[in-house]
Length: 183
Image (cartoon, rainbow, N blue to C red):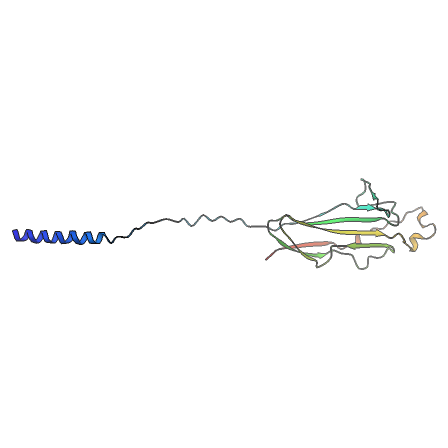
C-alpha cells in the first residue's frame, strides 16, 4: 500500500509541477464589443430659386425716376430713358450646384421699334456654378435712344392725341434654370 501511495504522490507532484509550468506561459487577453450601428447620414439637397426685381427707370441725365404705382407699365417715356431689372439666381440648397440656363436673352426679331435697344446678361446655354448660400445677379436693360428716329419722332408725333403704346413682353425669351450637383 505504501507503494501505491508513493506512486500517487509522484503523479500528484508531476501534475502540480506541470500545471505550474503551464500557468507561467499564460498571455494577457481582453475582449471588446463594437455595435457598428452608430452611423447617421443626412443627404444634401439642391434648391435653386430666382428672384426678379421691379423695373427701375433712369432718365438720360442719370436721375432715377420713382413712381411707386408703376411696376411694368410706364407712361410718358421719353428718349434717353433706360429701364433696368435684376434677375437673381440663388443656391438655396446645401450642395454646390452647376446651373444651366435654357432660354433667356433677346428675341432676334425684337427690334421692331427703331431706337429701342435691349440687352440681357442672361442668355441661352449659359452655364455657371454656385456654392451653397450664394447668388448671382444678371441685368436686363431696355434703353430708348436719345436719337430715336423713325415715325415716332417725326414732326408732331409726340403731340398725337393717342399716345403710342408698345408691349415689350415679346422682346425677351422666357428662361429656365436647371440645377445639377457639382461632381
